[in-house]
Image 1: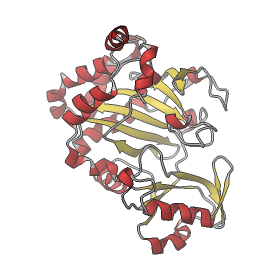
Image 2 (image 1 turned 60 degrees about the vertical axis):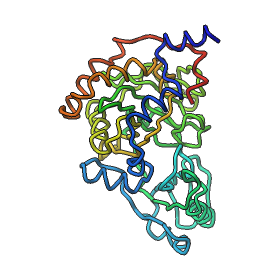
Image 3 (image 1 turned 90 degrees about the vertical axis):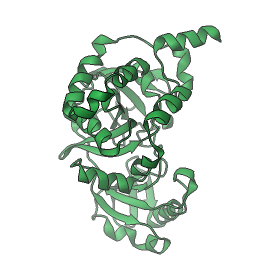
Image 4 (image 1 turned 120 degrees about the horizontal axis):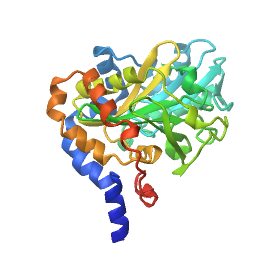
Amino acid sequence: MWRRWLGIKRSGILGMNGRNRHYIGRYNDRTLYPLVDNKLKTKELADSYGIPTPALLHTVSRQHEVNDWHHHVPAGQGFVIKPVKGSGGKGIVVIDHHDQQQFVKTSGTVLSLADLQRHISNTLSGLHSLGGTPDSAIIEQRVTAAEAVQAFAYEGLPDIRVIVCCGFPVMAMTRLPTHESDGKANLHQGAIGVGLDMASGRAISAVQHGALVDRHPDTALPLAQLSVPGWSDLLTFAATCFDMTGLGYLGVDLVIDEHRGPLLLELNARPGLAIQVANQTGLLPRLKAAEQRRREALRWSPRQRVELAQQLFAHSNNPSKPDDSSSSSLS
């Protein structure tokens, strides 16, 4: 036990208790949580800061609206249904195309109109919301990811998670959907996490269910070839979310749309810790480096903070490996 604790400490791994006490508890004022726990409020806030998000097609807030929501989606085109207060990908349904009666998911599974009406009704009842409270459902235009990243995913939309501390982006990964994850980018559902070099956006290492992988299980493409385009601009979007929310420790989920460029998908005031496994690097040294510069962060622009972060957290500066035995405490 003592040896394992020393291994975790030496590797710089941030555990759940340390995250909750020293970062979420210290830097995230609970009164600010609604800004990120409510996807509609996040969208409104992002609009005021000029940060684009996926186009909102419709909102369903009352049970009597459940029967006619489908009249608000574009004919034939894909869309996404999300609970406004959902988390961890729960309750999200991605439709690839439809004819108003049959709705085809990216996996090829066909849902009926009644299936989706039932799903939205359950969402309004709070089945997928934080704390099980009554909720609303939003329907967004389906994003088409840039080919450079989409080529590595399967049956779904790959996203990019950036951890931001005191305004500095400190660690990032892209999450690639698989057939097993039903086209969703959630690691606990079987998606692949690919750690990204903060300096360049190139892949460092990849994991599925906590184990290292070299190739995507469905596309067979070598994951080491993945490189995110427009990397510095994407990090600047993430750093701007610190100014936008006032939260000092947050996860920023982004996607690169083929036509619109970087879009903000959602924010998380309690981001998970598996990003350390994807990067094969502990968060603690980077978080402490960001904390030491938190006064400068209040004066610097997001672009200035990104430039420093790319220098400090380049993979070539810290190629260390975490203790594998600690990965079970990071989900």
